[in-house]
Image (cartoon, rainbow, N blue to C red; front, side, top):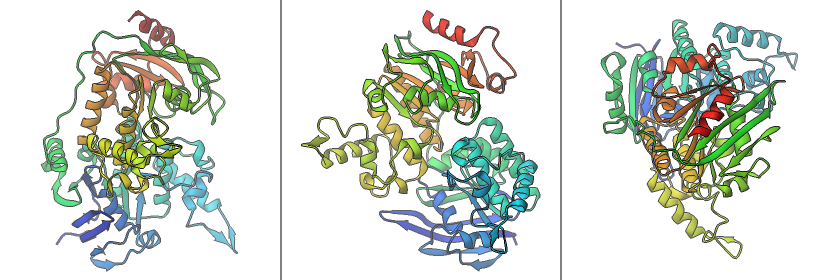
Length: 521
């Protein structure tokens, strides 16, 4: 008889207009890493939210160590030794790292909060698992990757024995992903059992023992990793054969669309500049990919270009027009679209419905309003077209609240809105973050089609495969500067990685070389 630590039997969870989990059975063996795989909206996060007590199922039972348990809320889950790292972090931004970790499990003495022992425990856990977190840092001041580590520490601090990782690598660099894989293997050695939601098949193949596949809310099957392949898993997941997308040769480059001229952006978290005297150009009909480990200035560079942060020196030109001091609305009207890194903070109004989110850049245009009032039928019509064109899945269609949609479908909505703007420049930051292989294939095809229609695309990604597959040129950022310009056909992930960690720098000054090269085209 198998030794299962968790058994979820015949789970059914419904939301208005959709059955998220339809009679699903999942069993986790003690001491294994078990992957949960499926398309965006397949029901993976919902199923794990049921196990963690965030949702109560309409039908089904949950057993722990063979005994039926009632998990009415996350506190009950924690009491049973079940912890969860969520895809969208559950952190209080104005609290410190330590305050977030102990929140809900605060140590007290004589009615007063005592943090010394908690601090020592968190520091020890951070060192033991090589998480390197500053316990006194405020959450809003640290990177997305560092926030991910805080979520992991929250779970380790509570000594949970069943650990749920919901898309834990979506915001991590390749090096951080490798470290996380080592951490997961070490946790198994310490008698933990892990449920691991991921879209990244190579990660599943490298670290997991078994994989269970969901599709459109239904259970498809469970296989041993050693007995399967990535192509078989992707076919189980999407119900068809999935092919990767390769970039065709670039046509002769057109005019310069984006000209970034020696810009500097001051850092909010340290004395050095986040972006230090950076110059490059993006042309019509090309995808310029920027690679780099998170925290090396890519975020601030994008903020400076798109108007989310002020530039302290230098200037940004779009189609020859200086937009350095323009508002975000003015930049949009001048022809700039932006797929942001943080889809909740900068991409969506979560309490708006899908239709209103898709109209955020058009509601003030002719046809979308009349005599000062929004033309709701036009907004819905516009949304329904984008929903169909970009395969955005939602329970109530255009009227679905954005907050209730899966992360992958929220991402599709942002991409649909930004591409629909018919801009001259698309700034795409982590465009396929949290998407499944089928959706990634479609987004890559869409970006390439935009490029082939003479749009200029600036893509910032932590996924080296993505950078290599669909970039015409690659720039590498390290410590706030451009340290290399590379041809994707003549480089490798390993070489890019060396530039990313600062162990290799091109002989000539990259800033001058990039600018000079760009002007020669």
